Image 1 (cartoon, rainbow, N blue to C red):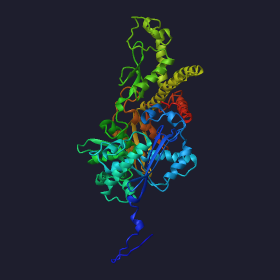
Image 2 (spheres, rainbow, N blue to C red; image 1 turned 90 degrees about the horizontal axis):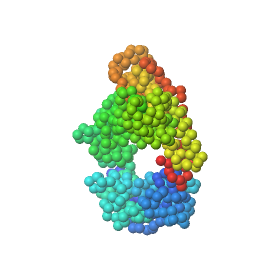
Image 3 (cartoon, helix red, strand yellow; image 1 turned 90 degrees about the vertical axis):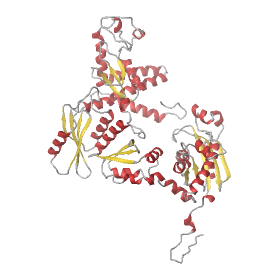
Length: 583
């Protein structure tokens, strides 16, 4: 029924429908799922538990185990207590879904971390031809982040919130128990938001979509930020960098942190600590991206997750000594060694080294050998895996042939290593030793991918100076000076201007670079890769290339990387649900 009442003063009062649905009259279905993993496309549901409540009273429950269609991973069984034997006679999701959809009809759905649970429900509906549920959804995890502060709860995990609100049920990674605990959390949160003027379902859903009080209170931090490309730095009260970012429009990007569109928990936490936003205007978007990388590496802000530790990379070094060997190092030195990298970890570097040892009989011992003092050889020599220069079996000149091949395989042609490891994989597969073949596959991938990356880096870092330009959206030209893979100057040439004076001025004021040793002599690998991506974009014009040529080896690792990547893509596409996941 709709009733419209006019006030004496002439202001029209809204209808009763406009007042919204009181929370006491809303029927909530609080539910939880247990699954075999996190991917809706690769994993299945093992249990559904749901509790229907209205006005604080439980009016129904729904609980069932579900056959996920494949084995439950051991660590999932340990976590949930649900085993393959328990779900063997359970119904499949095709049988459970219609009953669950009927149970939630006309209700508001509630879940802790609702996007996860709703993702599996929507995937099941899509797979069985049902339309996705259109029920309103409330996420208690998101609601708790907006209502509670760190002084009250250290985090917003279900177990933590259940203790905080004194739930009668302790969460235990079983669907019905967790759903019952979430009911108590929901009621506790509703009690908290009631004091903030939230009394209807519409108020509750609008409250979740609103910026947090901290976001609203600190909107002034974006005042004065220009609409230019550049870098922004959130700082705390001591001036310590909390987060560094870049944007082609600083004003719009910084303002977005104080709106409802910013929902990342870590970022919202950072906003609560931040006391100022400092900005650095840049000439071009590429300069802003490079400055961001450099500042993250230099200041290591606690809320940035990538590029914080560029110095932690490792390299595979072909040493410079009478009988060189492959050594894993963290420092590039100007000592005549040849480097392959960078690798993200010592483990990956060791995998690449093992792949190279399969093709080349380089020594694997760590001692420094003399061409005149001999000692007994190790077992590797008897197995034909080492030329044994230690006992004089192989001369320095003969060993040098293998060293030259290794250097060539690192910098120019990966075919020798690829063929040797591929032949071993074929032999192992023929003997049905598939696990060992898979290990060799991973080793070969570590070598080929890193060699392809390094050869691409070298194509730019060996050039003393490159000047390149790209068209801007308004007809201007963004011009950059690159020396040994490092961005040394950036500027903008107005539309219609003669380029020579601008290029000459930019080159004259560019940073002086003294290259160091190794494949990345003047900048981090990530900075050089960022420049290479920019050079690959459409419309780039090379103005000058001095002191080198921009080219890749004709038989480089890049031609083999595609085969490696396609092999992994095929494995992911055809991996059975019941199989062991890829490393």
